[in-house]
Image (cartoon, rainbow, N blue to C red):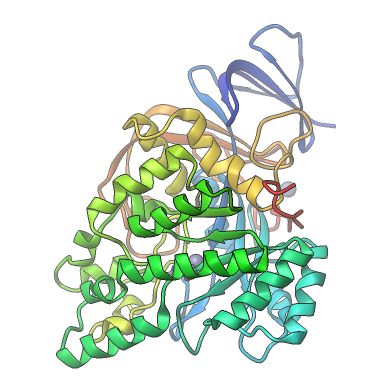
Length: 463
Ligand code: URP
Ligand code: ZN
Ligand code: ZN
Ligand code: ZN
């Protein structure tokens, strides 16, 4: 048995903040006590005086090495999970993809093969449904039983991931029955595709038109529609990457009615805007993702919803494409720019900056970045908190260190940073994953293959 003792830090969970020592045996936290009150001994002692001791981050939305738009997201499970660890995230939930004509099993097997023995931190899978039919619906039940308890559907991307309202309703009925959670990419893709064609016909080919055609109203409409479909099916609903204030309003209305409707936003919607999409010389392509960045005025509604718990989770939707050779595919046509932003390494720091800026409290930081995503996706208890019995996924965080975000210093396998030059206060110092050091005093000491696959329970907000 190996004992690790973390002494003298401020332990922060979503529930409390206490100056405490944390005792770890092998891979688990076994005890917590007020600083200096116990005579614990350990082979490894980590002095966290002046630092925060927080649960490892849970990033519930990543796309490592995802094929999209004729190319593949540039972070592998190996490079992407290493970068996640650098940023204080110790669990990711990535999206396995069922392609049209495939079974869910084939898609899931493929994603297991990609991730197996590659990850530096623990990982789970959601399943993207691209082809809802009778046999896929039966497969959903089996997947819930084996720990893939959430399913993403799209009202966007006709011909690729798109499901029509009937398919969405059927999948929701199945989830109502088997305890699965439906995750929704809510944008009216049929209407958007008309506007894309019209924009290109007018010669409006630059990246900023990506944001203009994917109208906020079409995000709000799909959010409203899918909430109503979930009501009809009697299923819960989790709306991913919420960007528009009008979509937030739909979630707030539903939650005020007491409906089991949840929402996620991402750092890019909190810190970036259509100003970035409008950057000259095709630089705007770096900020092309869907849902798109919105005008700056939308940010206040997102921050407010994070405080009022109308949004429960901040994840990254990490889906990096290099500017050179990948984003450039759409130089003459914004609709050919692969969609997605890098960010898995930046999330914990950007949300700590929100604490510094007074947008959220420290405990709310831990809630939206660690505890709530763990609860939402059936990992809480093991992940998302510092408590006896939990996995020893622990971050020693220096709340006073200053850093400047940059592609020159980040660890994601992508040739730009969406936050280039941004100064933030706070930095990860040391990271443990199941009791093993992954980052030690800002040095990577982990290894590919340490990370384990995590089968998940069903949503813990519903039971
Ligand atoms: O632009 C994005 N978000 N790319 C990843 C795929 C998705 O819809 O989440
Ligand atoms: Zn999406
Ligand atoms: Zn995504
Ligand atoms: Zn290991």
